[in-house]
Structures are given as structure tokens and as C-alpha cells.
Image (cartoon, one colour):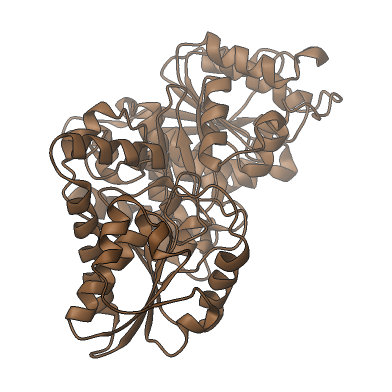
Length: 514
């Protein structure tokens, strides 16, 4: 686990608090430090002599709000405090901090947020797992309707800090101050959008407490995988940088395979060969130069081609077509010793609704119809020694594993990795990379411009290219996803999939010079 990237669930954060208090730092000190961090951030958001409304809830989040209110009042700001519940009902550290507030306390009515320059949301913290109702929901709606900057304490009220999900009303914050480490809900959608800019404050919890927490979730960033990133040495040549094989689809669907192949080449693989039927290869040959092409004949063409161990990474799925033909080619690929990336149609062909008809497109022996199932696919993955990476989007995952459609995106990706035995890249604006051993990384640098045809094909090529160079599968998937996001941001408006491999050299230059 890399220092600073850890994402703590609400239970893990509570345990970090308990261990810190057990080591001699009082809960009051932690609350004072949290409230001070909130006040300091509020000052940066407020005009001089501005007015602020502090909305306090019935728990420790409200206690943080009372600390911030006291400090802001002492600094000369106009402070109004509204509380859900009564001061007498508060308990523990929150009650002590409320006792220090000398001003009046308003009822939690919509009027509490009128006529101010900033709203501090200290209503409910990250552990809230039920929808807001009644007074709380009405107050949240008033905050969002006011169009006044909002500073959230820990998470915006209404957001589940572990899942990033909202089951009812939730505050849209301008900024959020959280403590010690971020939570998955700060990074997963829609939580990331609701949080606005997130600041992590040091409140006196030592990083040493992490050792006993077994935290398995991180934010995806170079610090988590840069040490394993392949960098060619002075004596490197193309044959030691790996050879990626991309399996093409039929003649009218070859573009996706070419996009993936270009991505694999740009990310550093030494050689790329796009293989397919004679007709598909004729089309690919017209478009490709640095990338080789090879026509393969059934029934043994693909298996014989992959018998050469120098061809050490295979990608199948982009534009492959859904059905038994693609499933048969996948089984042939998985029978090889190469690292494998399964994308798009390679996954859907094993879904319960997969088509069972047709032989066109077989490059290996066709499967029996009763082998077209997720269970068969996963069994083949678990039998092999070389790694497999699956790169589904949400729809493909639902078709492949309908039983895990519920729960947070993080939980779904982990379940898919455990059931499949593969590294799973569950794509989206908050792509999650999950391993069968429970490790998971959440990506946060993908711009909306990546939502375009062919973008995922290039990503799959990035993964395959890094696998061919010997990068461990989990780290390769994380690196590919991050590079994909950076490339998308570098292109920006007007992005098309063909742009992504072409801007990658500049992204790699920045990465490797850091």
C-alpha cells in the first residue's frame, strides 16, 4: 500500500480514530483539529467580514461544525449556527464543543441559509447509510437551491462515504474537508461530483495506524505503480519489449482492432501483429505500417501462431463480433501461455444471452454450444498460469455477471475479480481496477471527452502493451487506465479515439521525467 493513496472505508476510519485515541490522543483534540481545519478552509472561501451559516447535525460531524463556528466568530466573521435536534441531546465530544458556542442556535429551517456568503455543511458524516428525510431533507434542498458556496465537513450530507452512493437528497458542495485520508466515496461517482474540490487535513492521526487496518483500496496514481513501469535499457531491442497479438474481427469491423494495436505499440510493446481471416487481413493490411498483419486459417491457425512463446500478450474482443466464433477464439487464446486481455465482444460472447449460431470467424476449433457460459470462461481463466485482464463497461459486466449488478461499483468490481480469477477493469468516469486478492484502485483523472467510440479499444491496447513488456497485471491495468485518462485530458475537446495513441508520447515523457 502506497502512503497517501489509501482510501479508507468509514469502518476503517473509525478504527483509525479508535487506535489514535487508545494511543493517548483524546477525541476532543481530534475534533478540535478537525474543526480548525474546517475554519481555515472557510476563511479562504469567505470575503473579509463575510457571513457564514454553520449547519450542525446530531453527531460528531456537528461537533466539528461547532468548533469551526467558534473559531470563525473569534476571527470576526458573522456566524449563524443551526442545529438538527437540541443542544441537550448531543453526547460526548460533540456536546462539549456545543457547550463552548456562546451564540444563539437557530432551528434547521431553510431560512438559516439565507443572507450568507458561505454555508458549512456539518450535518451528517461519511457513515450515513440511510436516506435523509423530513427536516434534514428539506434543509439539504434549501442549501442546494440557495446557490451559495458550500464547504462540506468530511463528506456532503447525504453521501455514503464508503460507496459514493446517494439514496435520497444530498448536498452539492463547492469544497470538502476530510481528515487523515480520503474515502472511496470521495472518488467514486456521484460522490466525486458532489464533493467538489477535496482537501485532506492532518488532525493528529499517525500514519502508523494504517499498518493494522489492512486497507485494500487506493486512488489510482503513478505512485502506486511507477516502480514497476517498464523502461527500456540501453541494450533493449524490439524482441525484449514484447510481442502483442491482436485478434481482428470480420472485414467490416476491423477498425477497433487497429485502434487497440496502435495503443499497444505507442505504450511501448516492441512488436504488434494483427491476426484474422484472410478477408479481414486484406483490409487491415491497407491501413497498417509499423504494425504487422497475418492471415490465419482455421481450425489450428490461431493456436499454432500463439505457440511461439515470444508472442507473449494477446488481446481479443474489440470489434470481434458476439457469438460462438469469438468464444472459440477466446478459448484458443486462453489455452496459450501468453498474457491475455479480454475486451468487449470477447466477454459478451460468454454471457448467458450469447448467440449460439454461426461458424464464420473461427480461427481455432469452434466450441460446443454448452461451453458458452461465464462459468466456462472463468474456469479457463483460473486454470492458466499467465494473467488475464477483463475490461468491461457496466453493461458488459451486467450481461456477464447479472448476479452482482447491485452494490457499489467498487464492490461489483471486486466481486467480478474474485469470481473470474482475473484482473477486472470496470470502466467509466470512475474506473475501478480490482484483483482477485481484494486489491482495488479507483481512477479519477478521466475527462468526459473520453466518452467516444473506440476509446475503450485504445485502453485495452495500452493494457496489452504493458503486459507484453512484463509489467505485473494489476499494475499494468492501473497504469493503462491512468495513462488513458491523461491522454484524454491532453487532447480535450474534439477528442476522437485515434488521438489517444498519438498524444501518449508526451504523457509518457512527463511521467518518466517526474
